[in-house]
Length: 192
Length: 295
Image (cartoon, rainbow over all chains, first blue to last red):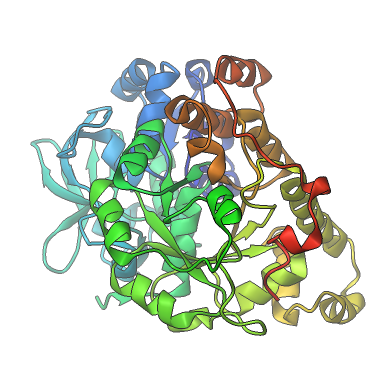
């Protein structure tokens, strides 16, 4: 299976390593033509403003929107912001998912944290009872989701940190920074 | 579901989010906005860029917290700030005002000629400079969650940045080909913690993110450092000491992403106006060089 990682800026190499360990063939996407033949695309963590500006400058906005209409796309952190329909700030967004994002929702870097999350939907992999150790870095929050968007995980206080809409997925945290490959497996199922 | 802040994982994690990006020196909120609009992945807030620190002479210290705060309020991207080598109280102050990363920097006048800050004590992550693998691993041993090769700040001459990156990456390649029984002697030779030598050998790279700094002035310089194998670049005086900072900043951001695409590099290098004047490092005396600060 051919999966792309959007390689404009951020931790795309970490995603690539996880995908390759799961047997995917990985392409780094920097220009529109790099999307050809891919079954799915991961938009990594990084700075969403940087990623948005580079995507705009190299004509990737429309091709990415078109790609997301039929193929699987997963955004982690900055990638989740990029997929959202609204982030309360003027910055380029793909608006593929019916979610509203609040950027830097938990504060500054000193407030970045790790936590064990319940993610019932990961039972696809048969390890549903094991919590997912999630790393949140200056993380965004999924403030609200529209109809047709499934909440995959929330913090204890109910704030949403992972959601799926068809073949599109957004997580506030970074499974690529852990050794737990369940989210990557889950995504590869979506991309099939 | 207990939340844990300030762990080494989250400190190192922010640096991983900066990869493939450009971190720009800015001296006020207007510069910070220009940097953010150009696509910087973070800014370094400081009162004077290194070229001015060089020109002015005297003691260079941590910047005014008020000025840093204004920059924090003006942008949505991470804000870094510098403290003097060994000056842990400046670091405590920077942590308290909410900077996202502290650069324990040789660009400022060192406060301690033997010891760096014990960085594990802080919740805020630190980036430190290095000229070789031993220096890098000593800083990581003290708790640095990100490394940058030093280069020679404020010169616009990339030669030292290249030297330091080649040294570090070359030592890692040497380490990978070394049999296990030689590792302890190598640790002793370069003055690095043994455990970090073992980890670096296993990973085939430094255990934290490694950027290049010091003398990068053009899109081609940035791409050169990326092709040599660093994770991203710091640009200090090179942007705001040039003729058209906004245009140059945008071009360097593009060059850092498309660092292997010579056509795009040619395109972004066109009509950038005056580069910073620069100083040739080979014509400088040793006393003028700041990369030698740090132990």
